[in-house]
Length: 213
Image (cartoon, rainbow, N blue to C red):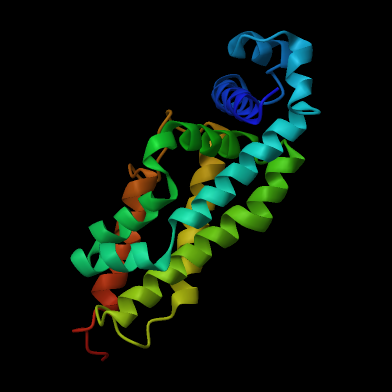
């Protein structure tokens, strides 16, 4: 099979897998289900991936690769120089989703939230990469804001990074446990709302014009 055709087939499998895993669950989705969605015979899936676990692992690798490549300092600086506010910070977090494949990565995120406690592959990914990446990205934002003189130089990136990752992880647990509706919230707030409130608080207490008592 030509390489371009093989890449297209793998992409189609991964796209369909992300959708099925998010909607039905990883365990509940069979290779036969996936093959039917892709338009292949069941055995043909194994020509591209040796197992369903291999498909999931590849999806998580995709998520990590694009998350890292899009969240570059130059992109963060460009956004925050133009809009050094909470809205600018939220725009930076949106860099993790490539516009051309946003739905695919959102589906993977949904799989992460749903499978994190029952699937060892996802659990390992959450503990070793997802949380640490959130902290790293938050630190990059804080350091950029300090470099632009928007917040004080004594602002601790580690402190705000820990708060951010803890909020996201707590929210993901709430999502996975099914507390609330499909957009669960703490005290009536969405995940985006919680992040906005966190960075509003940071700007309030750590803004360059803030004078310590």
